[in-house]
Image 1 (tube, rainbow, N blue to C red):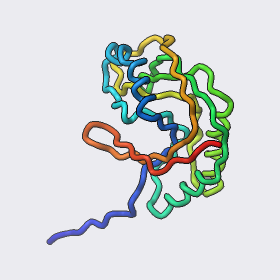
Image 2: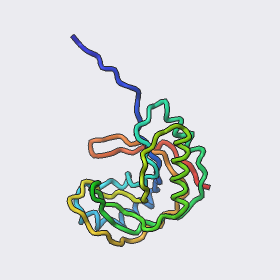
Image 3: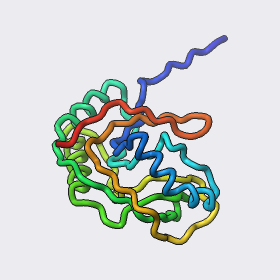
Length: 181
């Protein structure tokens, strides 16, 4: 006797992010390569570098259009983001490239994205936002926080990204981008 298992509706694991271009990814690698070597753990590929703005989570296929509609409603100004610190986070066991001072325009963008998603009936977890790029996962030991070469990132858009599991970690696909103006 054979049993068939019906798959549920397609789910998409989504988040909004700042998504660097290739030149910026190369600069991130140059600024952090020595620290990554020293840290150990599982290195994040440069193609996966990003700053998460709002994690949405699992979204059914039929609701992805609502996420896109929420993004289309967001208006925000371009800004410059500076990342200048290397730190490890206990509990998450990660090494991150972070910024000591988040520009007010970045906080405003995050707030507007959250408000727009809530208006479209998406439930979000309460998150403390600190801009960072994850460099290493499964960090074997905590490292002291220290200054790192400053990365100046002229932010002119944000992206909707889908995350899927792969054999070597997460695989990210940019679904859409929206300009800041």
